Image 1 (cartoon, rainbow, N blue to C red):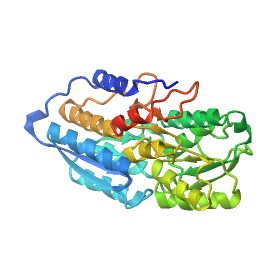
Image 2 (cartoon, rainbow, N blue to C red; image 1 turned 90 degrees about the vertical axis):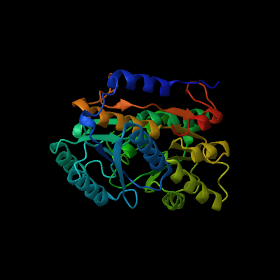
Image 3 (cartoon, rainbow, N blue to C red; image 1 turned 120 degrees about the vertical axis):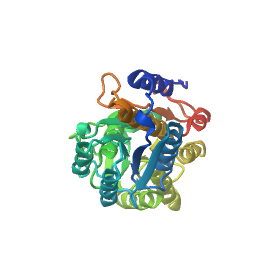
Length: 344
């Protein structure tokens, strides 16, 4: 039975409680803000930019947007932070490609009085940013892992799993989703702060995708070369899942492999409907970005910083499992609702 959840509404209500009414900007001066994403082509970050741009226009904030050339382009993100400092920005919204290496640049921005908010991808350590607005990425992974295990039933004990991760630098978002999936599937973790050290024989191997379709295809081909009988594929995001599907289709395996993913974008939900992806965990990047802009407005007005969700060290913007193959014990919404919500 499908269980409809209300996490998005909860997140919106919590945002109102934690931030309060936004004060007007002091002295009528325009406030400058920056959005720095991993790329400007991934639909997830396109939607994030839409949310930030719309909210900035509503609040009278001047927004400049920057992105890496590809996922993993750390140097371009550092250069963007330096530009934002020089421009006198009051706040930076950041989805970091390298969550450890970016910290010195973030520290420089904060020392300059800039509010830095991580979106989607926590920095390492997480308190390197003033705040983090994100999906609970571990839970997102856990949902698709639990769904895949329940879908296989007794055969989960004999699964052959291919892990399609993000990058060799292991940014936090990739680690959290990977480790959440494994725990949800019932596999013992090694060090939960990294992937690839598990000893369960069901894991065929890990490869990296750069979060795009071509990377997903190549990574899937590499893992099939290790074991052509892989029957479960975890993917860091839906573009990687689409690439994995094409590699499986090329060898006639597209109909007998479970692919699971995270993001919940409209193209990804459409792929769930079409059977390309069995289930995906839906995030809300537009909400992340719009809340981030509101937080910058509050900081510029009176120095207020956003509060995390009670009991967490970040502000949880919600997650829902999207599938038309609901299983007992795993909360989900169906594809129709997933299409209505993509991307909030």
